[in-house]
Length: 213
Image (cartoon, rainbow, N blue to C red; front, side, top):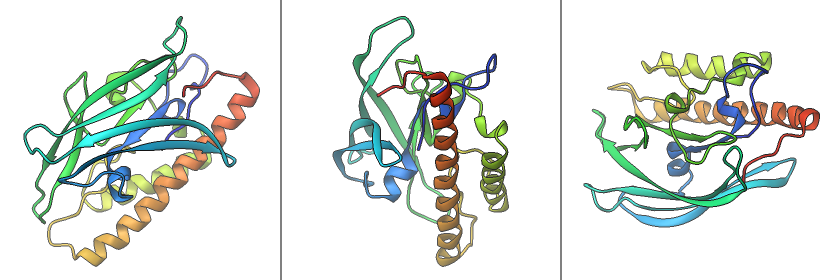
Protein backbone atom coordinates (compact mmCIF):
# COMPACT_ATOMS: atom_id res chain seq x y z
CA UNK A 1 0.00 0.00 0.00
CA UNK A 2 2.89 2.35 0.00
CA UNK A 3 6.53 3.16 0.38
CA UNK A 4 8.62 6.23 0.98
CA UNK A 5 11.41 8.08 -0.74
CA UNK A 6 11.53 10.85 -3.30
CA UNK A 7 10.91 10.99 -7.02
CA UNK A 8 13.44 11.79 -9.69
CA UNK A 9 15.78 14.64 -8.91
CA UNK A 10 14.06 17.91 -9.71
CA UNK A 11 10.68 16.19 -10.26
CA UNK A 12 7.58 16.38 -8.18
CA UNK A 13 7.11 13.98 -5.24
CA UNK A 14 5.60 10.62 -6.07
CA UNK A 15 2.85 8.47 -4.58
CA UNK A 16 5.42 5.78 -3.92
CA UNK A 17 7.64 8.15 -1.93
CA UNK A 18 5.33 8.12 1.09
CA UNK A 19 2.69 6.12 2.91
CA UNK A 20 -0.68 5.34 1.36
CA UNK A 21 -3.91 4.43 3.14
CA UNK A 22 -6.33 2.54 0.88
CA UNK A 23 -9.93 2.31 2.09
CA UNK A 24 -10.94 -0.49 -0.34
CA UNK A 25 -7.86 -2.49 0.73
CA UNK A 26 -8.87 -2.22 4.39
CA UNK A 27 -12.48 -3.16 3.70
CA UNK A 28 -11.62 -6.12 1.46
CA UNK A 29 -9.35 -7.55 4.14
CA UNK A 30 -11.80 -7.08 7.00
CA UNK A 31 -9.93 -4.21 8.63
CA UNK A 32 -13.06 -2.08 8.37
CA UNK A 33 -16.66 -3.29 8.23
CA UNK A 34 -19.54 -1.31 6.75
CA UNK A 35 -21.98 -0.44 9.52
CA UNK A 36 -19.46 -1.29 12.22
CA UNK A 37 -16.59 0.23 14.14
CA UNK A 38 -13.28 -0.72 15.70
CA UNK A 39 -9.55 -0.20 15.45
CA UNK A 40 -6.45 -1.77 13.96
CA UNK A 41 -2.96 -1.26 12.61
CA UNK A 42 -1.57 -1.06 9.09
CA UNK A 43 2.07 -2.05 8.71
CA UNK A 44 4.62 -1.77 5.91
CA UNK A 45 7.47 -4.27 5.58
CA UNK A 46 10.55 -4.65 3.42
CA UNK A 47 12.29 -8.01 3.12
CA UNK A 48 10.31 -9.29 6.08
CA UNK A 49 11.26 -6.37 8.31
CA UNK A 50 8.59 -3.93 9.48
CA UNK A 51 9.49 -0.43 8.35
CA UNK A 52 6.46 1.59 9.40
CA UNK A 53 3.03 1.30 10.96
CA UNK A 54 -0.09 3.38 11.42
CA UNK A 55 -2.83 2.89 14.00
CA UNK A 56 -6.41 3.63 13.09
CA UNK A 57 -9.92 3.54 14.50
CA UNK A 58 -13.22 4.04 12.71
CA UNK A 59 -16.97 4.37 13.12
CA UNK A 60 -19.25 3.51 10.20
CA UNK A 61 -22.42 2.86 12.16
CA UNK A 62 -23.78 6.42 11.88
CA UNK A 63 -24.77 7.05 8.24
CA UNK A 64 -24.60 10.84 8.68
CA UNK A 65 -21.20 11.06 10.40
CA UNK A 66 -18.95 8.10 9.50
CA UNK A 67 -15.30 8.70 10.34
CA UNK A 68 -11.80 7.29 10.49
CA UNK A 69 -8.95 8.44 12.72
CA UNK A 70 -5.27 7.86 11.92
CA UNK A 71 -2.45 7.79 14.48
CA UNK A 72 1.04 8.07 13.07
CA UNK A 73 4.49 9.61 13.37
CA UNK A 74 5.51 12.26 10.86
CA UNK A 75 8.65 14.30 10.27
CA UNK A 76 7.70 17.66 8.74
CA UNK A 77 10.53 19.31 6.85
CA UNK A 78 12.78 21.20 9.23
CA UNK A 79 11.19 19.61 12.31
CA UNK A 80 11.76 16.71 14.65
CA UNK A 81 9.59 13.57 14.42
CA UNK A 82 6.28 13.97 16.22
CA UNK A 83 3.08 12.05 16.85
CA UNK A 84 -0.03 13.05 14.96
CA UNK A 85 -3.74 12.22 15.07
CA UNK A 86 -5.87 12.97 12.04
CA UNK A 87 -9.62 12.49 11.71
CA UNK A 88 -10.93 11.66 8.23
CA UNK A 89 -14.58 12.04 7.23
CA UNK A 90 -16.09 9.11 5.33
CA UNK A 91 -19.04 8.98 2.97
CA UNK A 92 -20.74 6.35 0.86
CA UNK A 93 -22.58 6.07 -2.41
CA UNK A 94 -25.05 3.41 -3.50
CA UNK A 95 -24.10 1.81 -6.84
CA UNK A 96 -26.79 0.57 -9.21
CA UNK A 97 -25.88 -3.03 -8.41
CA UNK A 98 -26.68 -2.52 -4.72
CA UNK A 99 -24.73 -2.24 -1.50
CA UNK A 100 -22.53 0.67 -0.46
CA UNK A 101 -19.33 2.06 -1.88
CA UNK A 102 -17.26 3.80 0.77
CA UNK A 103 -15.00 6.81 0.20
CA UNK A 104 -12.74 9.08 2.21
CA UNK A 105 -13.09 12.84 1.90
CA UNK A 106 -9.78 14.58 1.28
CA UNK A 107 -9.30 17.02 4.21
CA UNK A 108 -8.07 19.70 1.81
CA UNK A 109 -10.16 19.35 -1.37
CA UNK A 110 -13.19 17.64 0.23
CA UNK A 111 -13.34 15.38 -2.82
CA UNK A 112 -14.20 11.70 -2.55
CA UNK A 113 -11.12 9.48 -2.86
CA UNK A 114 -10.24 5.87 -2.18
CA UNK A 115 -6.66 6.53 -1.09
CA UNK A 116 -4.88 9.18 0.96
CA UNK A 117 -1.14 9.82 0.98
CA UNK A 118 1.53 11.09 3.37
CA UNK A 119 4.69 12.08 1.44
CA UNK A 120 8.08 12.60 3.08
CA UNK A 121 8.08 15.88 4.97
CA UNK A 122 4.29 15.95 5.15
CA UNK A 123 2.25 16.25 8.33
CA UNK A 124 -1.13 14.90 7.22
CA UNK A 125 -2.75 12.45 4.84
CA UNK A 126 -4.27 14.13 1.77
CA UNK A 127 -5.32 13.09 -1.72
CA UNK A 128 -2.84 12.69 -4.54
CA UNK A 129 -4.31 15.81 -6.15
CA UNK A 130 -3.92 17.88 -2.98
CA UNK A 131 -0.25 16.93 -2.61
CA UNK A 132 0.43 17.19 -6.36
CA UNK A 133 1.94 13.70 -6.41
CA UNK A 134 3.01 11.84 -9.53
CA UNK A 135 3.74 8.15 -10.04
CA UNK A 136 7.29 6.84 -9.98
CA UNK A 137 6.03 3.96 -12.12
CA UNK A 138 5.90 6.47 -14.96
CA UNK A 139 9.70 6.48 -14.72
CA UNK A 140 10.31 2.79 -13.96
CA UNK A 141 9.69 0.41 -16.86
CA UNK A 142 8.58 -2.74 -15.00
CA UNK A 143 6.29 -0.88 -12.60
CA UNK A 144 4.90 1.08 -15.50
CA UNK A 145 3.93 -2.11 -17.32
CA UNK A 146 2.20 -3.49 -14.23
CA UNK A 147 0.39 -0.24 -13.56
CA UNK A 148 -0.65 -0.05 -17.20
CA UNK A 149 -2.32 -3.46 -16.87
CA UNK A 150 -4.20 -2.22 -13.81
CA UNK A 151 -5.30 0.90 -15.68
CA UNK A 152 -6.51 -1.16 -18.65
CA UNK A 153 -8.55 -3.39 -16.37
CA UNK A 154 -10.20 -0.32 -14.82
CA UNK A 155 -10.98 1.08 -18.25
CA UNK A 156 -12.29 -2.29 -19.46
CA UNK A 157 -14.91 -2.17 -16.72
CA UNK A 158 -15.85 1.42 -17.58
CA UNK A 159 -13.86 3.20 -14.87
CA UNK A 160 -11.20 5.91 -14.92
CA UNK A 161 -7.57 4.78 -14.61
CA UNK A 162 -5.82 5.57 -11.35
CA UNK A 163 -4.12 3.61 -8.58
CA UNK A 164 -6.43 5.31 -6.07
CA UNK A 165 -9.69 4.81 -7.99
CA UNK A 166 -10.49 1.16 -7.26
CA UNK A 167 -12.34 -1.13 -9.65
CA UNK A 168 -15.92 -0.30 -10.70
CA UNK A 169 -18.57 -2.94 -11.25
CA UNK A 170 -20.51 -2.39 -14.48
CA UNK A 171 -24.28 -2.49 -14.23
CA UNK A 172 -25.59 -5.94 -15.04
CA UNK A 173 -22.26 -7.76 -14.56
CA UNK A 174 -22.64 -11.06 -12.72
CA UNK A 175 -21.10 -11.13 -9.26
CA UNK A 176 -18.85 -14.09 -10.03
CA UNK A 177 -17.55 -12.32 -13.15
CA UNK A 178 -16.86 -9.16 -11.18
CA UNK A 179 -15.17 -11.20 -8.42
CA UNK A 180 -12.82 -12.68 -11.01
CA UNK A 181 -11.88 -9.21 -12.24
CA UNK A 182 -11.51 -8.02 -8.63
CA UNK A 183 -9.10 -10.87 -7.87
CA UNK A 184 -7.00 -9.81 -10.83
CA UNK A 185 -7.16 -6.18 -9.71
CA UNK A 186 -5.94 -7.19 -6.24
CA UNK A 187 -3.01 -9.12 -7.79
CA UNK A 188 -1.99 -6.11 -9.87
CA UNK A 189 -2.48 -3.71 -6.95
CA UNK A 190 -0.14 -5.79 -4.79
CA UNK A 191 2.36 -6.23 -7.65
CA UNK A 192 2.55 -2.48 -8.20
CA UNK A 193 3.19 -1.96 -4.49
CA UNK A 194 5.93 -4.60 -4.47
CA UNK A 195 7.62 -3.04 -7.52
CA UNK A 196 7.54 0.36 -5.90
CA UNK A 197 9.02 -0.97 -2.67
CA UNK A 198 11.86 -2.57 -4.60
CA UNK A 199 12.63 0.72 -6.26
CA UNK A 200 12.45 2.36 -2.84
CA UNK A 201 15.02 -0.05 -1.44
CA UNK A 202 17.39 0.76 -4.28
CA UNK A 203 16.99 4.49 -3.81
CA UNK A 204 17.30 4.27 -0.03
CA UNK A 205 20.51 2.30 -0.33
CA UNK A 206 21.92 4.95 -2.66
CA UNK A 207 20.64 8.07 -0.95
CA UNK A 208 20.09 6.98 2.64
CA UNK A 209 16.88 9.00 2.78
CA UNK A 210 15.13 9.08 6.16
CA UNK A 211 11.72 7.39 6.09
CA UNK A 212 8.51 8.20 7.92
CA UNK A 213 7.02 5.99 10.59
